[in-house]
Image (cartoon, rainbow, N blue to C red):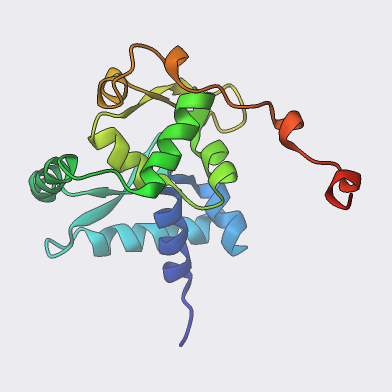
Length: 182
């Protein structure tokens, strides 16, 4: 199977999700000049304009990202509304717990704790009004910060986050090598 630069760029943009990727990031990733990558991205954008496609390639704030086309949004909203009535999965509960205890927290911080990507999970939790954007971090790239909502508190019958069980401090829960072998 032959790899194409278009396929690589498409995969990268899919993983970057809502945050998108800059032309410089994409050029670095595929080790090609920015002008060449821009031409490829322009060709890709024209391909995605086809009305048989449900999403398109757009540029916002110098970041390339995939967005759903307006005609698809009604269906997306319908499925997200239907999913509100379902129970939360284990991964949703894990993601919510991380946000509740560490908020405000970035997607990258959540992924470092969980060990897996959580872009789609965050979208689902936001669609269910359990999580919301809480601004942007002051770190490089200014990533989005997430926090829980009042809907989260209502769902778990909490008045405030102070009612969450206290977690032991990380240092206290770590065993030394010596303790392991005693």
